[in-house]
Image (cartoon, rainbow, N blue to C red):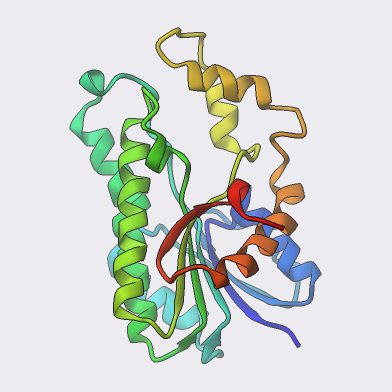
Length: 239
C-alpha cells in the first residue's frame, strides 16, 4: 500500500534522491523547493509546489494547496538547508549566521507549525541534521550552530507531540552540491575536516544521493525504535 511522503528541498541532492526512490517504490511524494525538478514531475504520484521556505506569507497557502487531497502523511522529511561559507568564526559576519538559522531552523519551525495545526495525521518527522551539529570542527560556524539548533527544535516538538515520532538524523557523507562547493575550496591548514571530505569524494565512502537514498529510507525505519526526539547518525545505527 502506497504511503504519503512530504519532502522539502526536492530539486537536488538528498531531497531529490529520496523523492525519486520513494516514487520508484510506488509511494506518493509531495515536494517543495525553489526550483522544479522536471525529471520528477513526469511521475503521476509526484506533487510539487515551488516554494522558498523563508517566504512565510506564502508557505501556508502553498502547502494547503499542495496537500489538499490528503489527510495523512506517513513521513515528513525536513531536508532543505544551506551551508555557510567555511571560515573562522571571528571572520564570519552576523548575516551569515542569521541566514543559516533562517533556512536551517526557523523555516522548519514555521513549516512544522503549519503541518501540526493543519489537522492532518502525521506519523513521523525526520529533520536532516549533520555530524557538524556536535563535532565542533573549525570553520563550520553557521552550519554547525543551525544544525545544533535544529536538533533541539526536533527534541522540543517531540516533547509536545508524543503521538508523532521525531528524529534529527545526520545522513553521513553524501555527494551533494555542498560537497562540490567544499571540493573547490583552496587548501587551508586551518580546516583539516574539509581536506578529509575532499579525499572522500568520488569514493564508496561518499555515495551519490541516488545511491544513498535506499540506505536513508532504511535508516528512517530504524530510528522509529529510538527515543522520540533523539539525534542520531546513520553511521551509528546497527543493522
